[in-house]
Image (cartoon, rainbow, N blue to C red):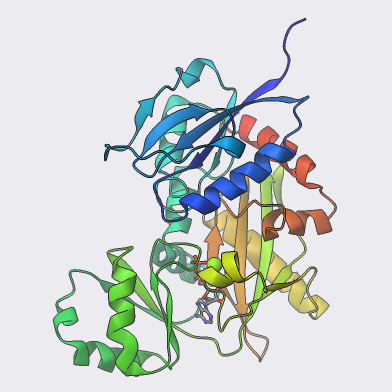
Length: 344
Ligand SMILES: Nc1ncnc2c1ncn2[C@@H]1O[C@H](COP(=O)(O)OP(=O)(O)O)[C@@H](O)[C@H]1O
Ligand SMILES: [Mg+2]
């Protein structure tokens, strides 16, 4: 009998600081993909950029290799002839930022999720804000600092411009990171240089953002295919730590989630509409999670957009769909169908 299964190439690991999280997400996707419908091929990218075909994300091994140029393929059968569609479950730079997507797009290989432009823009928090602002979508006030900025030699000037433009506390962030890596909440202006130097470890461009006091963190999952864009019910993250930092996300396990949120119906509708507009304006496709900050007066801001959101079974992206009536395995089917349609 002819094998009618769709051949899915799961790509995971990757060169970003979110390598380990990608593995956890990929495991969960692997477990939830219906083995009667899909033949799964697993491609592990190590921290140096070597691709390797492995049995599955369940029993991958961390391999230490020599530093390699990006895209070294080792023991990888010519995948062009093998897979029908790639499913990149890579978070952060070299995975969520359009680089991998560019390989697939230029070879016209179907893949799940946003294309080059949407991935590149939403990985870059500065570009995201610039584009959203231009379209009247609310974002919090911010300053940008480049590594080459001469002002860095004069900390007093930096402190002055922060105090002139923003109210403390501020959040200092690398422009292109994720999982809260490199982010510091700064309450005293004298602590700002340390935070800036930390953020520069991850990016040559950083943001200093006005902190929203006691912000509520509202998240919406978005899905699209050629027929259109759908948004989920919103959910709320209630961090245990002072903000939703790396430990809170992955180590402490005390974060609370409210799905769906307790919020005024009209506000929910407005936030959903903004998530829809954000997805469209940023040229996203397939999936994304749009994250909002809500202040005590009911003003909301788009904080950031994740074009490959966390995908563990307790992650917001699948959970919000679950609450909206789409089970994890059905969601994977929809995403794969959406990816297969992308060049139509
Ligand atoms: N302007 C802000 N006001 C209040 N809290 C913020 C602000 N920016 C970030 N945070 C906190 O820091 C966390 C991580 O920031 P975020 O921009 O989402 O970066 P990442 O891409 O690493 O998730 C948020 O979930 C929130 O808890
Ligand atoms: Mg975030």
